[in-house]
Length: 304
Image 1 (tube, rainbow, N blue to C red):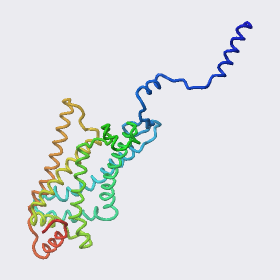
Image 2 (image 1 turned 90 degrees about the vertical axis):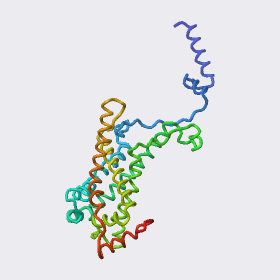
Image 3 (image 1 turned 45 degrees about the horizontal axis):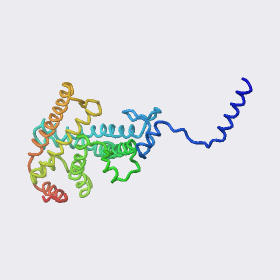
Image 4 (image 1 turned 135 degrees about the vertical axis):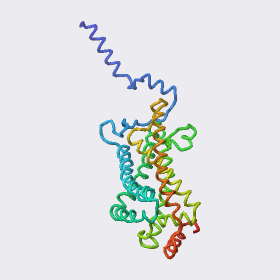
C-alpha cells in the first residue's frame, strides 16, 4: 500500500468518527412506517397439540387437558355402577322391589368416604373447572396472538376479533348437563342428607314415588338428563380417543353416524330401565309414602 492510499484511508476513518450515530433502517421497518403504528406483542412459545412448549416442557394447556380427561374417567366408574343399579338391573328384573336389594347392596361403597368425593364430587368439580380454565387459557393465547392484550373491549369488538374459542357441541352439552346433574343430586342425595341425615331410606321406590306424584317434571327432567348425558359421555369418549370425524369423506361420515348410533343406543338402554320400569313403579303406601312426600316437599319451586 503506497502513502497516497494510506492517507485516504485515514481521512475516511476520521470522517466516519465525525458522523452522528443513527440506526440503519431495514426494509421491514420502512414497511412498518408505511402501514402505521400497529400493536406489538411478544409471540408466545410454540406449543404442540399436546400442550408442550417449544423447549419440551409441559405447558398449562397440557395439564388442564389431562385434568379434564382423567377426571371424566374417574366419574365414569361411578356412572357405570349407578346406571347399572338404577336402569339395567330394573330392566332385567322388571320390578322395582326386586331391584332395590341390588342398589342397597352396592350403594354404600360409592356413597361413603372417601369413595364418594373421589368418584363423584371431586371429579365433577375438576372436570368443570378445568374446562372453564382451558377456555380462559385459550382466550388469553388468542389475545397475545392478535396483539390485542392491551386493547379495550370496545376496540376488540370494532375490529371483530374472535378472542374466545368456539364452543363445540360437546362443550355445550356439558354446560347443559351440569345443572341437570346438580338438580339430580339435590333431589336424591342432598335433600335426604339434610333432612334425614343420610339417604339410606332413599331408593328406587323414592324415585318411582316422585314420578307418580309429579309426572311431568319427573319425566321431562329425567329424559333431559339421560339424553344430554348420553351424548356428552359418548362424544367425550370419542374425543379423548381421537375418533371425532374430521372433513366430509365417506370415512368421516360413517364415523359420525356410528358415534350417533352409539349415543342413541346408550340413551335407549338407560331410559328403558329408568323410565320403563322405575318411572312406572307407582306410589309408595303408608308411612314410607308420607316420608317421601315430606322429602319432595322440600324441593324448591316444586309443589308435591
